[in-house]
Length: 279
Image (cartoon, rainbow, N blue to C red; front, side):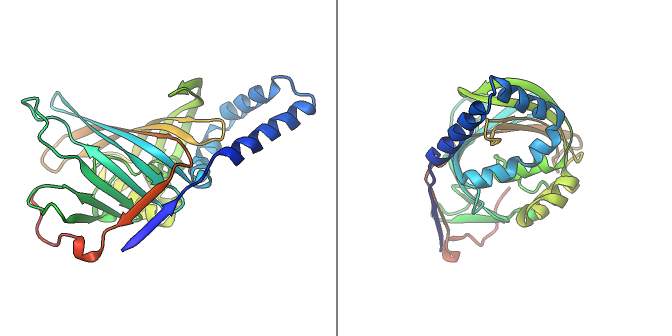
């Protein structure tokens, strides 16, 4: 059994940021700091986004909300998730809520998902899996690298996908959940992101580059004053094996409460289901 526990507070970061601001103003700035930051955001957006994943690692942990919307044949389905993530250890826990059935009744129990480097663990997976067992999936073997299959995109994989950003526009300032952010819009290349990603995400993003309808992924991302991702939305073209046309998928990840306590316990081998899983 593997167990991880992390917690970090933002107080020191906030104090350091305040001290930096005071020093800049003592040097004679008067509202110029924000203008300078906006100028860099507009002139160097690709460079700014390439550093976003590293900023999350330095932040340590956060709470997460996810939303995945799929559109196919005129029907829209939304899967929602909520949990926590440790960017240092690449471990996360999400409770994923499946949509209601066509009759409007919610007969699905939430699926608990544990995100780990190279693996996805699911409990309450259904389809003949005993209630006390977990299903383990090697994410590099999935045709989409688990950017879509699990119903939620791994937050760190979503951040490292931005390493493939090549055409980026700085849209301007706005807010996300009451936090001031800078909005960027662009397109990322999955193959390029796979080349530059961390070791465990290389195989994941490489699989996605080969499995999606196109390696080009449009995105909108919102960074706070510390350069941390607060919200990112990717739009994928996923090729469903049961259909000839691509399924349009919009995956949104919202990060908040940086420094939150994160406790993720990976299942022991005896708790992992080894039988056949129905589709």
